[in-house]
Image (cartoon, rainbow, N blue to C red; front, side):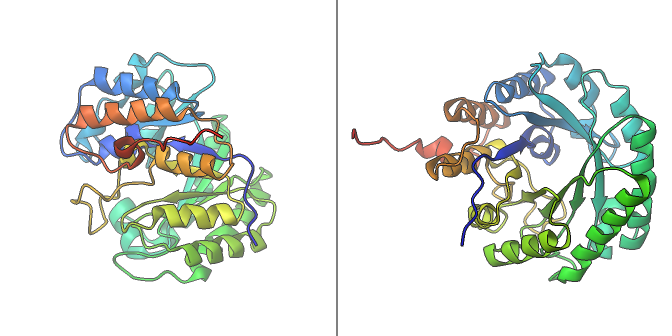
Length: 317
């Protein structure tokens, strides 16, 4: 039996995850106008950029300047990503960056070492320090991501217990710090998920922590993104990361050089939800305009479907 939510929330990641993976940088003015166009669609949270090493990710070197250029809306949160304390401090010092405490867990050592230069166990131990750092800086602990929750290109299928071990650690950490449980995001980082795996994993996590809010960060690397979103909706999930026009992808995916390997597409998934009677609070026409803007800036066709085929004409009743 399905347990669809009545309302879902999409957190937009295109300006960060989409432009970060590109091989060239794009003008600040264009990216600022793009973020502003997204803010006018009804989205409540937009990830603007990354506070990471400019040498490692030169396309994100000007993230503080991008935040400064954006004309903000009071009803939208504009967030950033960091992977180490230096990046966190840069974000803290950037006016206009809405801070959110985010813990990141891994399921395979190979991916963890490539992405964060440490083992799964070492990274897990570090999350307690991150949580305390957030508390010390009055940053709320909002989210906990479990990366490669459904599979890894380097180590194959991920046993369910590896995901649940991270959840158990998070439960104990929150109890020790006397803080509420953050939203738990199951991330299909390299596109291994399928609808049945999505349902099983969400069910297992919900059984372990029935009161926690569960979100997903899904990629459409292998073309099953919409099916995975539907499976999550059937399990009552109401929180999704997404990227307008299907921007983005993981640099450690084997398909990272294929321009079709992006995140689930914001406007496509919002359209699907609205067609099913699930409220998104989003203006689809405005989202399509933002998707067209992204395609114009990047200068090649992007993978969104609705932006290219349009919304169906409805027959008069």
